[in-house]
Amino acid sequence: MQAFRIRGPSACLRAHALTPVIDRIGSRLAAVHADHKRILRSAMLVSFFVLVGKSAGAMKEMAIAYRYGISAAVDAYQLTLTMITWVPGTVATVLGVVLVPTLVRLQKLPERERTLFLGELRGASLVLGTLLAGALYGAWDAVLAVMDAHLPYRTAELSREMARGMSFISFFTLLICVSGARLQARERHVNTLLECIPAGVLLVWIWLTPNKNTYVPLTWGTTTGFLLQAVCLSVLAARADGIRPGLRFGFRSSQWPAMYRALGVFMVGQMVMSLVTPLDQYFVANLGSGAIATLGYANRLLGLLLSMGALAIGRATLPVFADILNSADPDRTRTTAFKWAAVMFVGGSLVAIAGWLGAPQGVRLMFQRGAFGAQDTLAVSALLGWGLIQLPFYFAVLVLVQCFASEGRFRAIAAIAMINFGVKALGDYVLVGWMGIAGILLASALMHASSLGCYLVLSRTGR
Image (cartoon, rainbow, N blue to C red; front, side, top):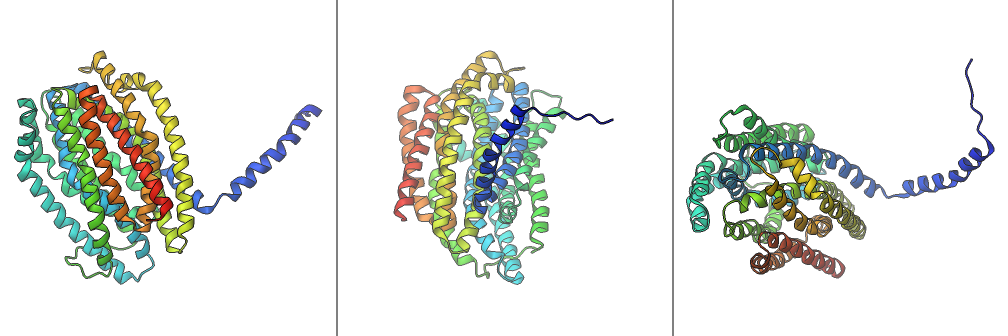
């Protein structure tokens, strides 16, 4: 016989009292605008993918720390990867931000125009990637000559040898960017998940290489990882679009004139802003052996936190903002952006506090094994604490950047980027001499704070 439990009067009264509260919560959730629901849904999906990707990256960093510790090989790898990806990464960032709104608009055009533009875009990316790879490989001795006075001899020699294989990364980066933008415009965020491929491939190379004194896994593991990512994204983008455009060389599509204008202005600002990375490397190189590796480990953990929020909200908002603008409602775009900027500022503040409290434990868990000792843990966790200050400003700025990009306000973005670089350069110059490596991360926080102020002012003025 089935047993039934009869609730008493007090339980019935509590359930009755909660009913209006539940109803109010349900009605408020139902009243949330569809745009916010789209952004939230995409942000949650991208956050999960970023978590998977960054977990793979964290495992890779753990393997590097165990195998190499803080050594000349890690210094050379961090320096080479940073400088190799600097220019192509900047181009890919600019191209991605400009491409997504263009591809959203392209969806309403005839298939012939879409096929023509995508084919020419692939051809242009192929040519530009090849030129960048060749230029970086040919100029690497000149790059090292700028830093040779400050780099240990062994680090410079290893970097020169690593660049021979890693110069191909610049070619793959542009192909990855184009395919990723095609997926993002369709609000398909699997490209974020596939960003774990380079880290996973490098991890396998390290595991399968018994010789602990060779740097070959660092070089070719990274390069083959980028190659595999480019191939996978190309296949998925073709499926999402339903178009296999092939390769076309030329600029006959009607989309190119608007792309030229946007790319030209935005590229100037981003190239100036991208100088922050080599600027930091220059100041760190003056601080002696191990400084680049120490900052690199701190930046890897900081990058995990930055990417969780930044990639999620950035990739979730840009196609939605572009779609809202296509419906000719700019006021709704800005209102939505301001609300999400406020949410991300508060969220970034909470993450920064939690990260600061857990920094020593996190670094110990991630890196302290093998050649990476307790003193290294103290050094990296101290740097991480300074780096966390930038989180709330960075998260909020990213939302406003997507809003400006969807509106085509690339002149404003470029102007703010130039201001940012000035703040960062001055901050590095003053703070590194006063605080050492920590000054670099504090200067980054000042840069993002000034950036947020500029975006808020220009958002209100509409200029």
